[in-house]
Length: 318
Image (tube, rainbow, N blue to C red; front, side, top):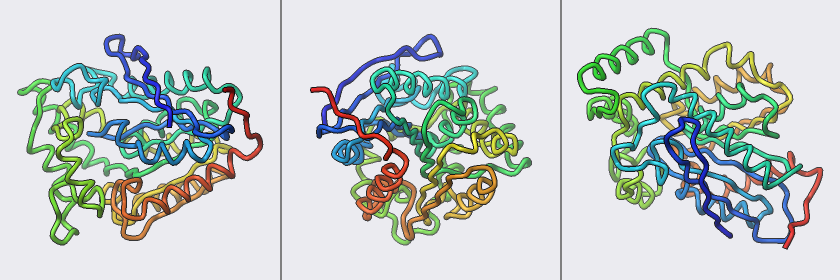
């Protein structure tokens, strides 16, 4: 795995996105995967999966989103996408990365992979740019709130911001958002046990300064708005029906309502997308790439990629 760091100016006009390019380890290139990480996450946590993809002929381009990882200028910026238009910046920044990947890998199939919050960024992306990628992997995603719950959540966040400001942080909001996620877990190793059955992953997550923070109130508002946007009927109606989509999730992932929300999304997409695949992993939680059976997950994704990138195999210039 050959890692190259690069920077691109965010569409917010203020921040610089920390990007990472990983070349294949062999002589042939099947395609390129652009990865969008999730909330309270960063690109480096995908290293093991990226190494696997590189060994199988797939280059990877990824980056730290606004308010995350090395893109955040300071801890004060963690979980903050901007005072307004945060959703738009996340999506248009993803377009910057896709366009950069196309410059490096001309005429090579490009697959977009979004995890968790990143899956919602990706979902917004494929609606806004329906012809931009060759396929989409929606991982660890979630359904939308009911109109009433969305209104209540939005109002609560607006009221709190009126007192604390857009960069304010609320332990109450964080607990309301994530606290229930461990209710079905017996003897959880910590409050992040909903991420994976691998205790080491959950312990490392809470020790990671790029993960262990409370997202800002405006950040939560942007995420709530984004989730609602990509679960609205208009989103389903806007898609390119020829775009291959893979839905993958853990059956014990609370973000996806333990598989129910993912199945609902699949049912809504069945009549819209001609090449649609659903894989739910029994017993797995939110981060299927960091689960105890991650090798199986890696292989399934590789097999799906191979079927969609099989027309050409490109010689890598040395």
